[in-house]
Length: 325
Image (cartoon, rainbow, N blue to C red; front, side, top):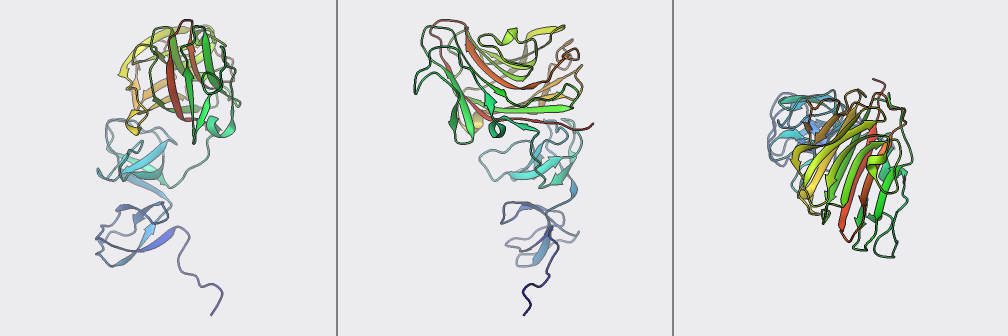
């Protein structure tokens, strides 16, 4: 016998079906990848059929969220439709959105199983952090690793405290950037002296994120679960504005919230919370066209004074992707 005999192309996977399937059905294969049953004919239990694992496919999309070009797409197993994140169910990674899709769209295109590396992945590439306050082993100090995540927290020590994560890498203003943050607010700030900011910035500050000259931020005040948004390019500043979306404190998967900043148009950076655009009609919000840059990813937790506490704030993802156009 020859050392190797050709069987199938690399993008085909033959599967003996444990249950009937229809042509074009999406299933998760044994190696974890998504597969699409090839052909238009249905197949019965026990039949052996080929599943495609590469290619661009038009697929059913759930409504209620926007898909941004290059963003992650997941298959909602129970709904048989695409969603933007998975929960503790049988959902699985599908690929990346091809082009933008609106919240009301019921169909989109996905590049199956594609998962390119981010231009900046703060949890992969590293970050800068300079805590302000009295550092104590096991208490206040640098962000702490939790598996593939990091956590930030403030303690009851009566003093000004600040802990941050600023990406080492930055991008130019015209890099057509889209930033994604995924956080779990383990415990909200116990009082109004606490501020949490996350987004794009040209630097950090030892005590006050509002003093950063160029930024597009999501903002949460201590003692409040309101998610706000603000921006500043050194010339045009828009103060913290309520998005009318609230965050729920907790560390479980149900408390995980996604925050996206679509900066492909620096004069109109768009803000998304869990896939839904917010404050689209707010004048000048996201207008950072006058910024000099470069801009990086920033998570910034601070309190001005007193014994208020905050956190842990778990950062599960902090990424930025760029494109030529």
